[in-house]
Length: 153
Image (tube, rainbow, N blue to C red; front, side, top):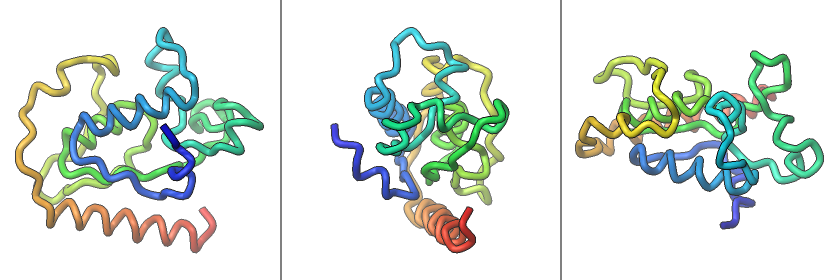
C-alpha cells in the first residue's frame, strides 16, 4: 500500500468505525509496528506518515506532548457521527480538537477506557450518514487546516 499520497493530506474523512480501524492498520503496517505493542505505545504513534521524518527520526519523532517530545498535529479527522469520532479519539492518535464531527445533534465525545481492539465499540448500530452535516464537519476541518497553515501552526 502506497502511503506517500497521505503526506500532503490535511484531512482524513472516515465514513464509519471500520474506516478508522482500516486506516490505522495501514499506518501500523507502514511503521512496521509489532503486533504485541501495548495500547499505550500504540496511542503514541502518529496518525499520518511523514516519509522523510520516518526515515531520519523514526516514529519516535512524533509522540504526544505529554512525553515532552515534539508533537505534529498530523492529519485531522472528519467523522459523520460520534461513534466514528470516539474511535479516532480512543486510538490516541488524534487530540480531541482535531476530530470534527456533527456536534450540534450529538453528545460530545468522551474518551473510552476499553482496549483498542475491543469489540464493544461496534455494539451500537451505525445509522445512515447525514451527508449534509458530515460535509459541514469536513468544511470546518478544511477551514481550520487552512488557518493552521496560514499561521504556521
